[in-house]
Length: 236
Ligand code: FPP
Image (cartoon, rainbow, N blue to C red; front, top):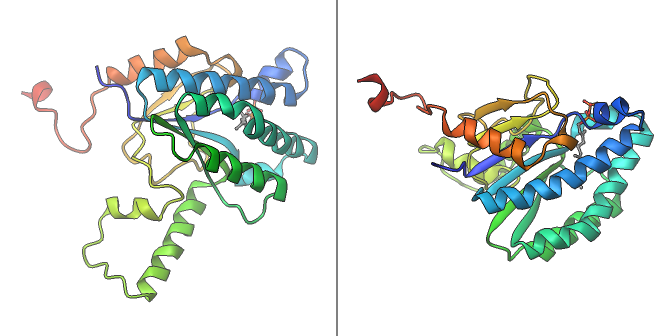
């Protein structure tokens, strides 16, 4: 059975997970970050080549300062410590999102983890941070316009050609998972998910363990992907 090449996860439900047990929302983010580490290693072992996760959206800045600061500190702490384990597992970490309006220490931590893992070849963990899908398309369109000004010819420009104008030149998403019981895409990787299969679960992200991940993969393997065409075997 085919394992999806690129899996993306909207890691939702950290806050509700914490509140359900009378803890502060930040405890949910901490637990979610531990889950992320386990899932990233498990996904690689299953043969997934690229795992993209939504860690912080451009719109998450609307949250209380306390929660935003907590998430920034958590990301630094993780990038500086826990990501060594990902590196040892041959995982290259890349970060997608805008860098212009984030704290200098966060920017430093991102650059360090990208540099430290850049030669790893087994799998990619793409962390979407200060990220918006429409913003990624706008930023790509601006870079394309700059290339046009420099003389690029686009008569034959195809949809595949735009990937290199996105934050990272990653393959299209095969399977999009959203935890936490909501049914929306929340401005996540809009260009890359054009033919993704969607999998929604009520499980809050901190509880999304290996067996939940396997369930999503199994569901994907039983989907009939046609990419706008017709599946000859099934329709004849
Ligand atoms: C959505 O849950 C989750 C986030 C906004 C943050 C996700 C971050 C992590 C899982 C930690 C990632 C850590 C690293 C190191 C990259 P929510 O807070 O919206 O939950 P709710 O819908 O229950 O309120």
